[in-house]
Image (tube, rainbow, N blue to C red):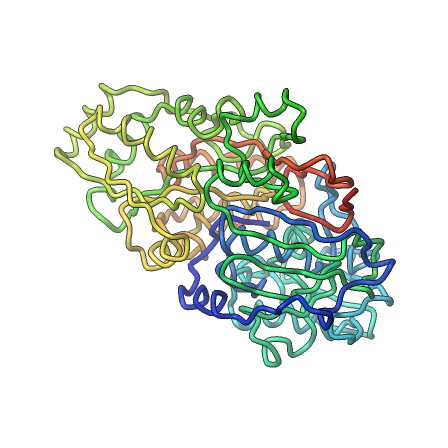
Length: 509
């Protein structure tokens, strides 16, 4: 579930979102009945505008904050320990050779347009992702066929054992189940037809409105309507929360967390996340193609200062992406800040008076704050950093086009090590925008993806992680905490390490 950028997006889609017609909110707007919500409108402030709403095309976390409540997946991470539990699939089994996975579907699920879910919808969904080579197609490299023996059964036939298939089909709404033919019937950039607790009602330049779905198969929702407002400035979002203009936000100024937790004005909770934040430099653009230059940058960074700037004590420095709490964590930290060594490496590479563009976005203010520390660090070794603050849609386009010296951002919602490393670092990886290519790393990651023995699999990922770190394919910085706040009116909301914003159980007093 990832959910800051995982690939480039079309800037034109932003215009589509902004231009989409908005309902006037009159009596003709359908809302859920007594079982589908009885508590008014829940207002959430998020920091960025979705780039688009097609779950199989978007890569933006802001999009998935909305889509989490509109669509469902076959399985879903448990909010407590992130192990997988039933969602649209009630159960599943694996053949003895590990090459066939069989999922049994619920028989009481209705899409927002009133049609009933069956196995043809699931087959359509995954064939669309795979055949059209959409954002998550790389996850299904071992899938030879997706078939429907009957209306409530779906089989995945694999070329090799894939121990993390549950992660691939359920870790986040990028693999959401669509009704058969949805991409032909709807403009999925601005329209939706899911099975989730809320349906998409209005899409506008300033916000998105969802209404409760009266025929939802689950227990909720507990409110009639959800309104997402786009507020990029953390102080503004916090003020809106404190004055009661919004009920919830994840855009909380990090320096205010301790104060807010002691004030009693609002509820502020934190939990270690499964995310990581990093910087990547462009291997195709000299002098960043030189290993010495990349190593000099890594040695120049004060990661403790960077983590403090990001979250004021709530982030944990990490040079290998996967956080300490995970079984897959690997304790490998070869870079300790050494300004003299960094200068020597640049001199060895014949590099002087280097200016490096660092692409960030103010729709994720953390990137701007961290970039300022990085700029100060690199200035000490003779590198001038040009901080390039872009709109997120422009950031995505530049990333996809390779139009950067370096960029800074995070990967959110990772669960399996495959999600942390694979598409970002294999030579032809879907998200390998930095251009790293090492056949030995490819071999390790490909073997790890199909290794059934958990301990052996971890050894392969540990070895791959060391090669990635040594080459500075990504320059890993820290694991943040999830920080969210809500008013006393809100009940039933649960903070999650994977940052999934699930509003199904929320009620308002």
